[in-house]
Image (tube, rainbow, N blue to C red; front, side):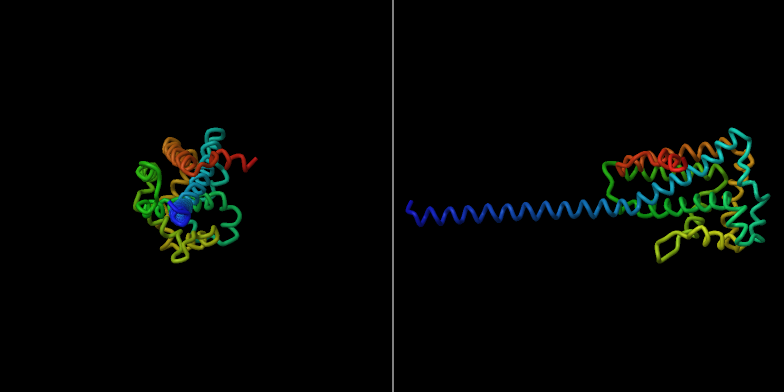
Length: 240
């Protein structure tokens, strides 16, 4: 083989190798981009759900701890029935009523996040059978609150009322209080208000524990899925 042939073969071989490397690099970049896109999409659902699960669990745990120690949770013993909310002004919601109403708001936000995640689970890309596991754990939380007479359809309605569309955000505490001040809108949340009044008075302790257990199980799953720390423990530590 003469020098020209050797040079030509070397050039062709070098070109083929370069093109192969470029294709492999491009392919890897495409895969990395798709993985990043998938992870970002998952995080946009799972992180908010994880946060609201921890918040709801923490607040309900305050009720449970106080009931176990003192027989009631006095900061939330500010109403006899939901209808009394109709006459409350902004100062009450920002003061005396904040422990009770903010707890109801946190649980309502959890319902909104569960609605959103459950609706779009088919579009999430989770490892193995984690999407089925996530759906089952969300349903377990729904069932636990249904056992507290906050029925499934009502939970969904409350979650929809808290969600603000098309912005895709959740109502602030102030906006939620304004919602409760409207009798025709408040009535859909009455069962959740009744539940919080009952547990504040030391009633329905087994139902409260069932809800706490379901929330803890969901929280552990979300911590593992997001490779994060223990969010329930972190929530308690934040109060110290």
